[in-house]
Amino acid sequence: MDEENNKETTSLLNKKVGNIEPESKKLPPAEITIVGLNEQTEKSNGESFKLPLINFLCKHPDKEEPIKISKIKVLPEDTVLTKTTWGVEDKEGNIQKGSALDDVLSFFKVESLIEIEGKKCHTVVESKDSSFLCLKLFN
Image (cartoon, rainbow, N blue to C red; front, side, top):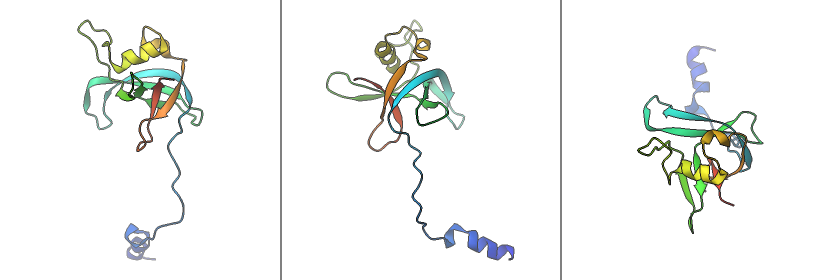
């Protein structure tokens, strides 16, 4: 078969829709164990974030390697809020009171993020249109 005919048969323009359903890549909400943390300062395209993003490295029961979670869901009063775990500092260089990281520390009843390693937490899907998991910081 010459190169031109091979291109015709392999071109997406000549293909039909198959019958195989896509494999689901989303993980269901579950109890996870926080196995580590890291500070991410750059986006995947190499641009810098204005603030560091704190990723919680979590062991999910349905996945061999740790997953990164950088959002939380909290239940203040009568609403559910989703917050991103940005490393916001106050003018003294401490974690900003009222920030997502403050919510995490309060939920786990610890004074620093490093103390969260080894703790268990439930996850919840970010929204009905999303497959991303968040740490669930309410009962």
